[in-house]
Image (cartoon, rainbow over all chains, first blue to last red; front, side, top):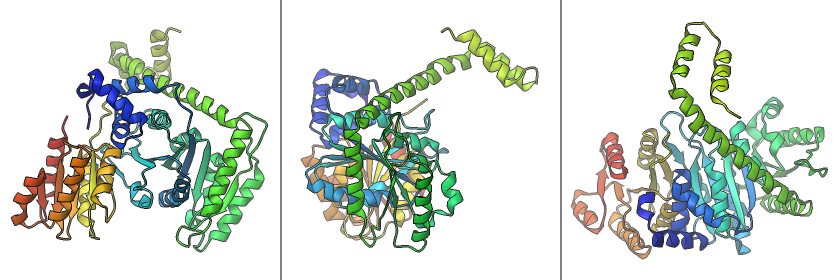
Length: 331
Length: 132
């Protein structure tokens, strides 16, 4: 909706900044778009905000499509909002690999909270970037923290590796499973089991819930998750919920608070935030190398020549890659 | 590498449970490379405007099949005025009698697509309206 050219004069910029700090829908919404579009104005905004806020508590919620993540968020937040907390939700859905478009429909399930004045919900498409993750999530978290949100919930569809990156950004990772998720082989295959601090067996009113509960609990017994470099461990916990029969939500909320307290007491909270900063730095480097460095190589004649040589069978791609790096990389 | 994406809000306002049309339009827009946010059924004009601001959309497409389009669209523009929104085009689709076209346009609707409109016509219009 907004192009940086319309905002170049200083007055409008200050207006935008004030709106962000006041957590106004319009200014926050626009700033997130600027971040998503990698607009240079977004970097100006972040420069003005950086280092001047307390990091918000980040909860990542992930699980297969249709597991009930958005509905759970709706139920979870309804009560938290009564405590006068300011909460933001970033709902990430995949971009189409073919058209680049996206259908972002997580809000549909959050009807009970959308009207609350202390809630800000933003739907975000993955926008297939080089790292798989939409790096805009990191900056959006900074923006929302600066806007004074106490808690940020990041919802992602979790089946593969890339979404797990977003979950790892979170202080507390909640993995949502459902009874119909398949047998234990499916669970073994899933990386999700390795990232969860809290597991939710949602739709626990459905047949098969008891079996799934046993399977998940067995996996817990196999490993005790050693947490993020420190010698303190948090044992993953399982909560059974049903948003249909309305149970388990309070227990889930208490488990999240328990984990939050654990993070605070063990100082893992600070440690996680430092690690997230490093991760963002790496992502930014990767992105810049991809666009600036690899982009340049692809335009040079040697690259085209080597590509032809590979096609005609004179050299292997490995040899070509080594040659290109040797020629272009000065470290 | 272009990162800028057009974002469109598809909204159902009022007591109206029919959203097949809205979903078809949403899908067509998605397939043309647009990021579509869908409100779900039975939203209020206030909800729609708040969502449009938070999601920073370039255009709103409202679907109404209940017959209450005159009242509801008027309310929508009232909220626009309260929130000082000026540059956000609104399309209306659904069952809209031709007699009401003039009124809806007068209060601010950019374009009306009634039943039977070829889907490509809507996609083309959205693309040309939101082009940078």
